[in-house]
Image (cartoon, rainbow over all chains, first blue to last red; front, side, top):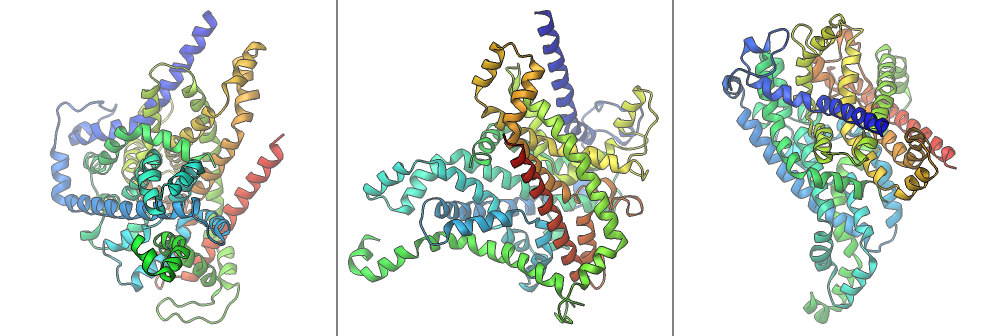
Length: 274
Length: 303
């Protein structure tokens, strides 16, 4: 009995220590954003700011167009995620339910393509957006992300788990494929869909390399590259840097806290079985 | 649709036949233009000699780009650094994640709270959180050096010392890799039939023995899946370099393979598309071989 207790204490100690390490950077970022420049540059570090000081945020918004970056990010995320979800639903339904020649061969080829690093594609994609004359516009950040093999793969795997008998029954009742997809499949797949939408939104919100390549003017910059630019060009001080970083991270942090359950369950369900 | 079926049988039948195509088109257009075409194009581009980006002119096909890239000192260094990163970050993050996932899978108190804490870095923006780590790694005011001071260890110049900055990169990389790894492992653990554990306990097996004899073997498919996903992303280490070091470290000492690709077509005038393409293909081949070896080991390991 005594030994059991000892191992339980050890377990909790280990878990608490790990949890602190995982959360600490966020704590440090947010508290740092409210510190004055004296409070940031003391050693040993000061854990909490004496008062909530908003000067860093004010400075960030005044020196760089963060409001604009924010708006651009929101526009890009909403439009690319909406369109991508739509194409993903249609595509995975076709791969999961409809019969056509070469279905499994095409799907196999798609899986192989999933292994190709995105970094390998950017050379050509950069040229494509330049040729289409949409580089340095928000379109360049939206159009290339309107369909995704990865999310289609996850959703197709989930669609596969829906019993065939449901489909047959619906067909007998005179339900068309289109109606069946939107009235039956999509509601059943809601947890998987939410996961896909969240993962996609997080990835899109945080994407850095592509916006850095495809855009150059400040008016079409999104948050991550805007933040990086603000820091490198302005030589921003640590406390201002933390304020700007908080602006970038906070929306996704809030989204995550609301949707944590969905992400965990969805990844478990769609990502592994199949 | 019903009306069409009655009035124009031919058109209706044709539409029914191409229906899968109609469902697939929106998805396929994007994939063809922004995934399939670039893959084919990079492959062709990597063989074009003296490819001029502006005019599209080139002097025939050959292995010149590959020979140049493989002989360049920068690329050789890049391979070394990238491999070092993969071989450090993957095993460490894997071991820690297995332990944490196993503990989180136990019947512990405040499980939801712990899960939230461990999954939180999933929302990480490489730039924003990377900058926070930069501040934490700060030589003078950094909280990490303060911690080392408590343990009576000399402060480390994490960001500017060429022998230490690799470890700053690895620590940040491992930290950001953990949440997704833990989630996948946890879902793998939840798929293990509790019957196995009950049987082992009845036989009087100890915790540690259960862990190595039951948990790890039954979890091995998930472990291999995670290894593959993580090594694909670790080979592409690049984004982290910008917030932490504003570039490839001190005197290019953290010049990774993707940084090489990026540098060839963004850092040179005129851009060296041929070299970038050849380097991208080499990177792909390395990742491909690496994941194939892992799969081979997995197959051998099954019993």
